[in-house]
Length: 239
Image (cartoon, rainbow, N blue to C red; front, side):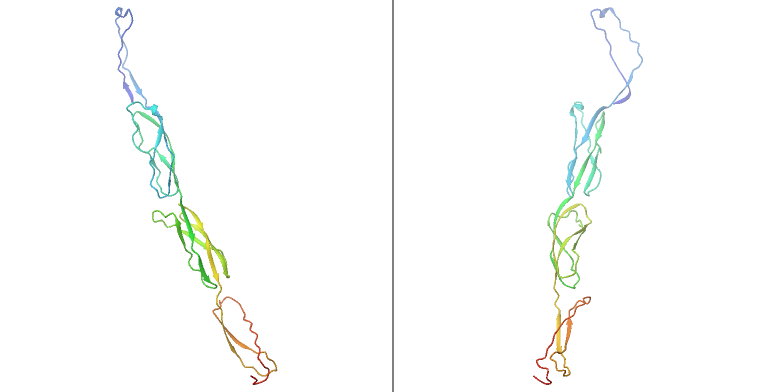
């Protein structure tokens, strides 16, 4: 291509009577532009999993639009980033001498990586503080030494029973998680009672009073131990 190029030309006469003429040309210097040849290049859509290497970026065009001996140079590039999402594929260094490119962009999609995660079962005794809830990855693996930032929790409740351990929040959104819940069991607490007898004055009755001392009770709980005592005889000194 070029602008204001000098045009060289040759002329001659043809025909049966051509020898009867002397060709005299009067023409100024001729200059003209050579315009670039149009061509459309379209990027191909691409996809990869989070953590994988980029696929080769390719493009399509109509080969009939390129003259023999001409070829396309350079490479496409994509917008930077490695998190899951869509990234524009740009023309980069793509060029072809003497052609004007109409470029049609496309996207490279980074898809989330699948993880299968199983909660570990846990147990505590009624009244204790919850232990740390843990989980394990049973299918798939983290990329780039990632911190998954996964928070798991259990269903609310402090009474004896079975509660589900479920998935909470997730900070790292480059992973699609299939979560397998587990059970959190609150078991009964042992309550120790130390009982001692207490003498009483003769009142003609067999009922009496015992002293009871409770150990291992949860402080916040309000419970009473009912003990009914009965002497074998209501007579003083009777055995």
